[in-house]
Image (cartoon, rainbow, N blue to C red; front, side):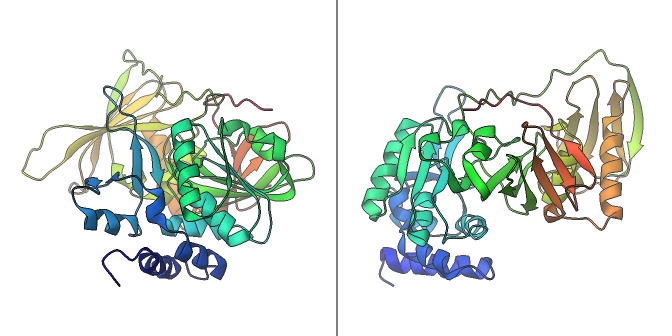
Length: 393
C-alpha cells in the first residue's frame, strides 16, 4: 500500500469493519470499500486524544480517517463552548452495524442528520435507491454536498429541521437517524410507509445507548426491539423544544446518611447495559459526577449526584474511582431515596440475568405516547419521561 492510496485504505477499513460486524451484508462491505471516508473529513478533526491537523501531521490524519474510531468534525466555537462537539463522523463499525439492520434492496430512505455525508453515500452506494438526508446546519449541509460530489455519489441533501423529516418525498421505506433522541418525533413515523423501518438511536437523561429498530404499523404507530449499539450525538432541532438541562435541586430538602454496597461506576455509561436499564426504567433520572480531591496520587475521588426528574429528591454517593470496593457513603436529600431506586433497579436487572437492550423495545402509539417494554410489547412497560415537545407536520 502506497503512502496515501485512498482505496487501499478504504479496502482495509472495510475488512476491519466486516471483522467487527459478523455476517455483514456484502453490499455494505463494498460500500465502505469504495466510498472514500477521507473525502468527508475536514483538515482538522478531533479524537479522544485531541486535535489532529492534516497540515501538521498528514500521516496521523490519514490514519485517523481510516481507523475504526469516531471522529469529531466540528466544534461549537462560541465562548465557553470552544470544545463542545457539534458534528462527528461515527465509528465505521458502528455505522456498518446500524446499516446492517436495514434491507439495502428497499427504498427510498430518509436520513436525519447528514453530518459529513458519508453515511448517506453508503446508503446510496449500497442500495442504488433514492436517499434524502436532512441537515440543520447549512454549512455542514453544504460541505456534505461538496464531499458527495467529490465521491461521485449523489444523495439528495437538504438543509432543514430534521425533527420535521422531509414530507415532500414521503413515504419512505426506512427512516434512519444518525443522531440520538429520547422520543421519536411523530413526523418520522408519519413519513414511513406501513411495514417500513425506523432506525432511531435512543438516549435517556441517564445514558445514550441503544438503537430502536421499529416497524411502522398500519394504525400509525411503530414498535420494535433495541440493538446494543451507541452512542450518537443528540438531535439538534429548532422544532424539538428539548430541555436537556438537569432539574434545579432542592437544597433545603431534608437529609439523612446511610451506606450502600452498589459501586457508583456500576451504573454509569462505562457499563452501558446497566446504564441503559436505569435510563429506561427510571424515566427522568440523571447524574452528575463531581471530582474532589486526590487522597493519594493517582486516585480519583468523586461524588456521584443522582436526581429524579423533579429535583426534589437527590443523593450524593462518595467514592474513589475503581479503587474503593465499598460500602459507599450516601447522603440522601428529599422524601424519596433515589439511590435506593437505583439499587433496586440494579438488583432486579442482576436477578434477571443482566439482560441487554435487545430484550427491551420501544413502542410509539398512534397518538404519540411512547414507552419502553421488556421481552414483549405486552410485557412490563415504562413510559418515557416528557423532556421536550416535538412538533409534527
